[in-house]
Length: 299
Image 1 (cartoon, rainbow, N blue to C red):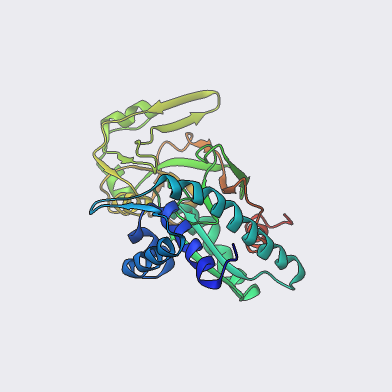
Image 2 (image 1 turned 45 degrees about the horizontal axis):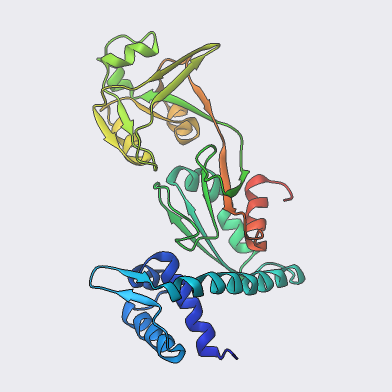
């Protein structure tokens, strides 16, 4: 059977709908309307004489024929995309689209410092950055890569470190500490107002503090629980409570004295940020160039 331009385009739409789980999510990713996608799929089904989707008012699922077709379409389009990506080796510089999912801290600490220079150096690459602290399936959501803390990357991904280990510490404002109970040991934090941080996985992160060989892990009676660093930081700067945060995120505030390192002999070293991408795909040249910028060396 010979494919025409319409069939090939519709098969790509079919894959996106199937992988994102519905017409609305696929429409948002493709910048098309759900009705346009539905019309295209009905046309594909009519031309093939086979129903590919089971449609209800609440869900869209693949039929048996649709699931079988998806397997072949994914393999075929991946091969085509791999071939097109391979052409980048013959260019002076990479081109195309690059979609990355990153948590807010990684966006500010490792991506923002290099992105402006990268865009000037590779103007033919269109970069889309999704700041999202929730852990998502980057393959299903159509991203080329993601950035996460080491140890939280899915096992079926290739992960590459993009910086040194990260130092975590507890900080508070001088105003808070002026009237707060005495702090000599991490266990004293139980008598303080502390900010819990709900991670992208949904769990609340226990504070870990170390001094030499002594290690303490704390699950406190949190005064407030947030799911983003920015709000946690603003509460601490306003004198509301103690927050647990990456040292690099508060370096300026520590230097100016706006925030103070609580229990200065205590901190914790954690895994570096890692950039990760699907193991079944080759590393796109545009992503390779960005990774070199973040690592400061050849990849």
